[in-house]
Structures are given as structure tokens and as C-alpha cells.
Length: 177
Image (tube, rainbow, N blue to C red; front, side, top):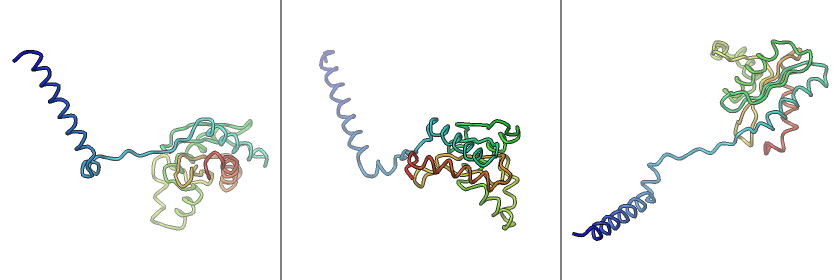
């Protein structure tokens, strides 16, 4: 058999195998067996900065010097702002509140209240990194949690949460809410 014929036979065999593989890949059984990819919305840096700045500004309007941290859905820091005269401890508190809220997909105030009322939830305080003080609020795009904002430094967690919510209200149009 000549080299030319072998090359033609190999090419024909390759095409036949490729066609069979393509036909198999499009069968319902093959589609069901293949893992589906997830599509997620992501928190862009500009919006994270806007939310952090909005939270600090909302608290400043009420006379509170705070820090605000914004994290993505995995709890990784995207933006941080610390107001003039905000205590050094406010940075860590805001980050832990944001991380806790993103992780649990709930407000830290609601989690704190739940832990106080429910003995079964009291152990939440023992999870490394969790901070059950008001001021951590999930950031949602529609119904999907894409991150969280944490505020620390106002004279009460409920006031930290108000500042976080004010910032999220300002960003509502960009979040599709």
C-alpha cells in the first residue's frame, strides 16, 4: 500500500471517529452524564469600593467613625475604607463581620440574635473567624449572594448594620435589585 493511500485511509478513519464522538456527545445520555458548569455573578472592584465608601459616609453623616470592608462570595476582601479617627480595632471587626455574613449568607445581627435565643446555635461563636455582632450584611444580585459588607465602629451593631444597608440601598441599581 502506498504512503498516499495510507494517509487517505488514516484521514478517513480520523474523520469517522470524530463524527462518532460528536454524535455521542450530543446524545441526551452523554449530556446528562457531563457535569454542568455554574454561572456566577461577580462583585466588581468599582462596586465594592462604592459600597465601602457609602457605608463609611452613611456612618459619618451620623457622627460615627467606622471602617467598612467588602468581601466577595468566598469572603476574600475586595475593598476596605477606614474613616478618619476610626479605631484600629474597627478594621478587623468590619472584615470579620463581612466574612461571617458572606459565609452564612445572612446578616450578622440576625445570626447573633439567633445564637442568643437558640442554645443549638450558640456554638456559632466557636467557628474560627465568625464574629456575631451586628454590622455584616450580604450583598445580593437578585437572589444570589455575591459578597458581603461589614461595618465596625458605630456605638452598636444595629447602627453598623444601618450604615451597611444605606450603602447597599445606594448601590441597588447596579445590583439589579
